[in-house]
Amino acid sequence: EVQLVESGGGLVQPGRSLRLSCAGSGFNLDDYAMHWVRQAPGKGLEWVAVISRDSGSIVYADFVKGRFTISRDNAKNSLYLQMNSLRPEDTALYYCAKEPNGYFFYDYWGQGTLVTVSS
Amino acid sequence: DIVMTQSPDSLAVSLGERATINCKSSQSLLFSSNNKNYLTWYQHKPGQPPKLLIYWASTRASGVPDRFSGSGSGADFTLTISSLQAEDVAVYYCQQYGKTFGQGTKVEIK
Image (tube, rainbow over the protein chains, first blue to last red):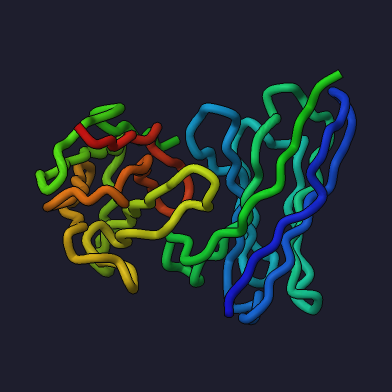
C-alpha cells in the first residue's frame, strides 16, 4: 500500500526554523518527482515546491524563495522541507505529494503536518 | 506566472442534478508536442488529503465514478458532475502543470 507520512510540524516563533519530513512506503521514491503543498486555515491549496527524481531540478513558489529548501534522500525514501525565517502567514497544513515523473499531477498525498507560526 | 481562476466560488446543487465548475488559465496549458493539456482536477473533503479526480484535462483517475468528467483545452476547462451525490460535497480545485491551483469551488447540496 502506498503511503506518505509527514512529520515535523508544530508551533514555532516567527523568524525561527522548522524541518518537515515526508516518509514514503509501498513505492520507490526515486521513481517520482515530489512536491510540497500547503493549506492555510480557511484558505485554498497553495503549491510550495517541487524536486525532480534525482534532485537535479528544483522549483519554488515565489513566496518561499530564499527561505525554504526542498531536498530528498532516495535511499531513505524520504522528502524534506527546511523552512527558515518563518512568518505567521506560513501557518498551514503542509502536505507532501508524489508526481509520476513528467505527468504533472499528484497521484497520492500524505495526510499533512500542521505548522503554526506564532509568538 | 500562470494564474488559475475558477468559477463559481461556490454552488449549491440538488441531489441528482448536474454541477459544473469552470477553470480558466492565464496561459495555454496545451503542450503541443504531445497534444496534452496539463490541467488536473482534485476533490478535497474536510479532514482528508485531496484526491485526484481528472488529469490531462479529461482522463479520469482510477476508481473515480464516471459521473465526473473533465473537458476543455488550451486555457478553458470544465469539471462536470453529471448527477450530484451526497458524497460529492467537497471543494474542487483545478491545477496547472502540477503547480498553481485555482482558488477552489465549494460544492454543496441545495
